[in-house]
Length: 88
Image (cartoon, rainbow, N blue to C red; front, side, top):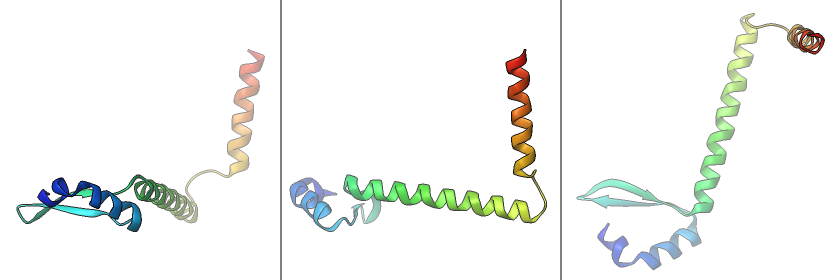
């Protein structure tokens, strides 16, 4: 941490150049990770993609177990609800 405080400009240049995070140690223990905004955004995008993939995988597994309703049935139900509200 002390080196980071003393040489912040150099660390920032390194972060931008390499795109690799820097782990800051306090008393010999990893305490803080610093990374540039572009790399952080890439990490967030990747996490979001993985969450989407996991949700799709879970949906497919649910479908294989026979859970849920067919899409046609769901859409027909929604259409009926909307028509009922429009007529009310």
